[in-house]
Image 1 (cartoon, rainbow over the protein chains, first blue to last red):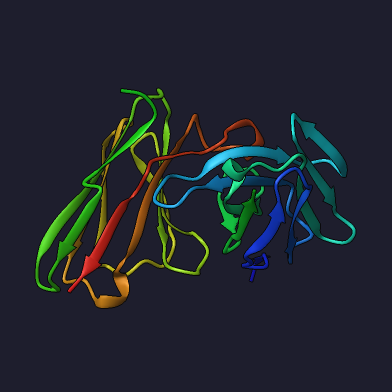
Image 2 (cartoon, rainbow over the protein chains, first blue to last red):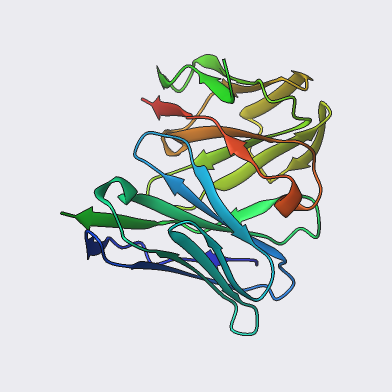
Length: 112
Length: 116
């Protein structure tokens, strides 16, 4: 059974701090991982994807992938109250058929 | 209109009712998906369509019946639902099936379904 695990949170960080969101997965065959942000009552919005070991940076966001440890993370630098949302981690285990397995999400609260 | 649009946004129905959820994408995509999002649970993939052909039925009960009349529209017909079916139903689309990093999925805002 392929699984993606996330701590449900809430993760509470002060404004301006680095928020670190973590995700583990169970299938070594997975190739691509995605981070979505979902505000309450809204659609999941793609933030970043990563498929190579190491770091990938996009603005204030950095995704990290460690395939040996089966671990994916998302760092948000200079966290803002507007970053408060649920962050969904997803992996594509389907070998090229775009079928995503999602974690339950981590709720992030950035307080002023 | 842009993106993926779902209607209605909210739906309350009894267990014996028949209703339909509608999804329309304005992105020119060829693949469409239905997901179920229950409280505190991960998004669950229900159905996948590619070029109007169903390519995945993820062990979904027959009381959920999808329909994809063309690549822009996707329906989920509901009949004799159970209270545990209350959830947010999300539609997504991608350019095609294939490597997900090349075909990111775009989601609609969902239909919040409540079964009485």
